[in-house]
Length: 287
Image (cartoon, rainbow, N blue to C red; front, side):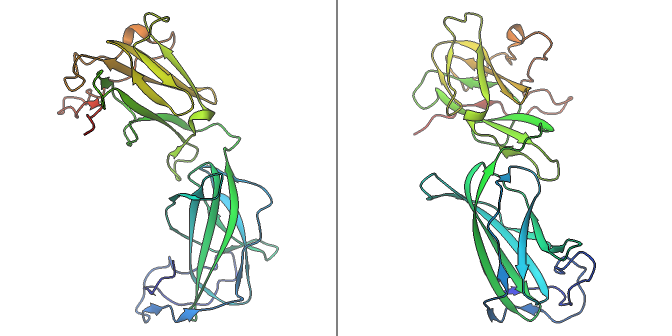
């Protein structure tokens, strides 16, 4: 994670609130270079409370008298046994100071569960040091600004899902996502933390089956249904049509006949104000 070279201006720490200076406007100062790994300059105290998903969290940082050039934070997300699930994005952060003199950075976790946060600090004299802390990421208490459901693991959150009964085209996953801060963007919500409800014309024989622990839809027979996904009193509707051939797309089904009272029919994904409509969402056959 140590950077071999960064372009920026090397200045001393500011005496007001901002200590990190890498984001300042570039000047004609010489190119900044990392000159070596150092020790004893950086410590991360263990957090006393879990981090909150999708919102800004403060992380206390102990620096020992050296000016900061830049800092970078990254989360690695782990399973219950501590094995790596996925690496988060590395982001540049600013080292700031509270009125009492304590220093901190602000980070936004992007997954719920066990995690490790690594902070790398590049010092003005060319020294570099990293520190890591273990953390638990939990859902924030506040209601999200928006709640959406992604189709098939992608980033598309509108459009009817077209499926058929062929092997490889009869299953798809829904991905609940929430936006707690527009600045931070959407973050995934675990399936076990939302409620899924299948709405069909025949409640005793719906055309799809929903696995509430994973968000996976399985096609059972021809027909259409709505999946109502709810999180913190916010709901999103997903129309699912099971057809003879899921690649055909049918007559732009929107499940209007199944929409709960007071809610609008979910868009088919084909409504774009006179412009060429996007391709429909369908489950691609697997080899």
